[in-house]
Length: 326
Ligand code: SF4
Image (cartoon, rainbow, N blue to C red; front, side, top):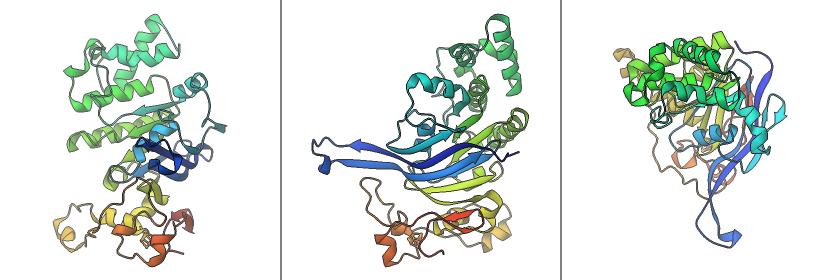
């Protein structure tokens, strides 16, 4: 249940990657992965962040946990600006902000046992030792639906779904406040996806967790998110409550994304109209002014190619970045 207290504020965040080898600043090229992104997350809330592959959503998650240094803007966690703090100071916040990665196998050290993987954070942050440490690991395994005999096994002995459960147990071992879930179900079988989402929801209720839930598809965040932000080429295009987004999508890109979700009832699926996006995705390298979506937008006008639209509140708590929406 979301509280009124803001846990995370992201203000005008930018992450540019310098590419090429020119010595002259004016000739340098930048890949603008995240560009002027602003949003906040309340304590206990799940904020879904959605966009196609390469839109910058994972980079944004990695900036928040400081795996990447932001190029500009601010990250304020629980009232403290952590944008430019030292690695030593960040250790304190690493305990409070954890991440679950998309590929559970790649994110787990294959030479470590499950017990060592889960216990690593406990040791780094000096939380507990000896018998109590082992009991805590067994309790975490139980919480994520694994058995205590799994503690001595290695990641390759598990299925994809079980490995993701190990990744979740590792994140929870340090009792974080915010968990950045970076496409945690994308690599899993459809039958396992719902189980993992249900487990994350139960954990949130029982442990008071706050989630930033990153996904490439709106159908994946529908049930878990309280609010959703839709991202395109480094920019936020629309933010509103989850129910409102599915009922009343305003941005042309959100409308196209929603229209591509298959409807389980074949009769309804036949009559629902899919919006096909034509045109090329613009390059994130030195992008020109204008709406990032204009090359694929069916409503594009002259102004869209010249002026970048601002994210404005068009209805209560419903923000959209589009020149045609006032
Ligand atoms: Fe389409 Fe223009 Fe709106 Fe961008 S600003 S979404 S190009 S209508």
